[in-house]
Image (cartoon, rainbow, N blue to C red; front, side, top):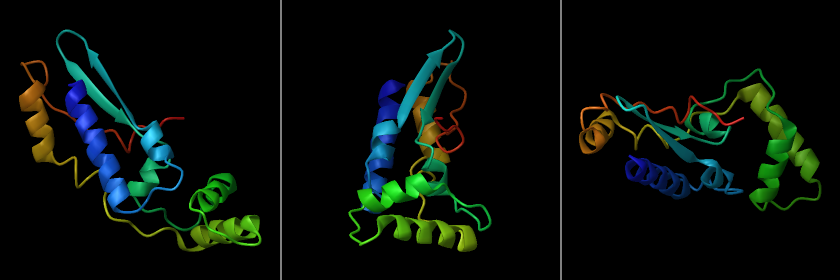
Length: 141
């Protein structure tokens, strides 16, 4: 199971890089898996960085995102400006006003039902009935 989950993580990171989403590398550093085996059931979970949810889903207008992660993103992306804080605040206000449109899928295109079924088949041994992705549902605090 560990091998299968690590391959999924590697594929998520490759897709993330192919889409040029990398800024700080935090996504790659924080994505991890956990496997538990009760003896009758094997459960595999992939946990992503908090912003993983917003990478896969759009963020609607109305709610203001936190300033500091946006400010850090501007810096990590290497954007050069005379006033980094002003630029970060402008981005925060634009996101609050307009939201963020859906981006290309990172997780859904890789973790398909067919792939989950294949993992169950490879790992199964009768203990694994199904595999669900919580990579965008379970968020590290």
